[in-house]
Length: 403
Length: 178
Image (cartoon, rainbow over all chains, first blue to last red):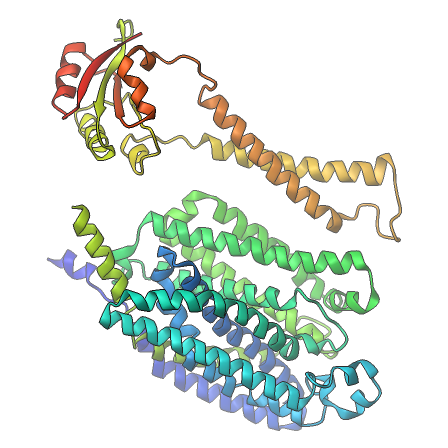
């Protein structure tokens, strides 16, 4: 009797919602207060932008993985789809649009706190920035951000309501419709994301451009989203509903997807570096130069080992992928390394960040937005069954027809 | 029965499901040295046969390591030692530029090792197999599924094994001469 009781323990991710919300709001208020104080304003805003890039990026990563799932229809995807829907759904995207306001405020402040192109005096003496005015100006950036978020929120809402509807109606046509939207959405997400990441992050290094940048970001964020989802599934693999679907086949598929993204992310990362290295042009090379000075190089170099070789060697081993506990470890590893990598990508762009020593404001902003992220995630994950109902019934039907 | 005049006893089945069920019952009856022959890959059959051989992945991993080292060595040797050549003032050992070739060599060596180790360890090419001694075996590459319990199995006794296999629901049971 006690054994069946054990097996029926149900995972409740929604429980953390209010706790996380309180922590998040308190930390966010402190962050906003520090942004207002003259001395700490600059550092706080830089930290905030990084935190927004990471947690917002996780949201976009969840969204793009949802789109990928609706394009591939792989069976493994249904096990984690609800996690991505909650993390990258319309509400999560909307929250990060709201949290963009402080960054938008620096654009309209007419100073170069974050973006040099936001300062009219700098633009006046710089023909390249003048040429980029349509996109890299406060109005251009605000309009683009709104359009891009509007499109993503609309599409995320459309797909999520379709899966929720199918849970009750069991109408297979819903799945077919999502399958037509998935690939189209994926293409437009990459296109719109290219414009958006160019404005939000790439323009921090004012004269530097790279066409590999947006795919690099999107894949990196997708990698973080995948590892978070894999972590949740593997961490709670003994609780319902995951206990019911856990099998060596599922962990193998999830592990192989992580292996794929490990290699794809490294491919993009390295290609961008190699092209710039071969080109040997000062205006492109300066991006890596600023990231190789004052101790930053040790983070950059360690990423080769920590973000490529470690996960690669762990994931090519079939034993890692056979047991949820092992896979959980790799997923946690990747997630943590992604945080460090995004720190290395964003913060050296600021001239005052000569050394990779984390500031108190970095920790504050990271925790504030992280808590908000999990609060939104929890509020969304409890609105629908963790495993899509339609898929379960399909499996049962198939099982019975064979038996 | 090492010096049996037979290679084994073969049973012929009509469906992959029947074959899998037969393999399971044979295993439960204590037979371990057996093999199945099918016209196409049958999902779950190798699990049922408890066929586990993970030597090919290990060879492939070793091949990958050798490939990576030789690709890297080739470029280091040619560019920096055999014929040092200054390209735009870059260092002679420009390891960043060597990653693509190193990577390709890793994949190439790994894949070739995989193919050849698979062929060699499978004992291929194999122009003759005792199973060819039974005429009906020609259909193993068309529409029939075969299970053969081999004479080297410790529980193999010609009469007993034949009776056992006849009870498995096979279309026919034949002794396979050596």
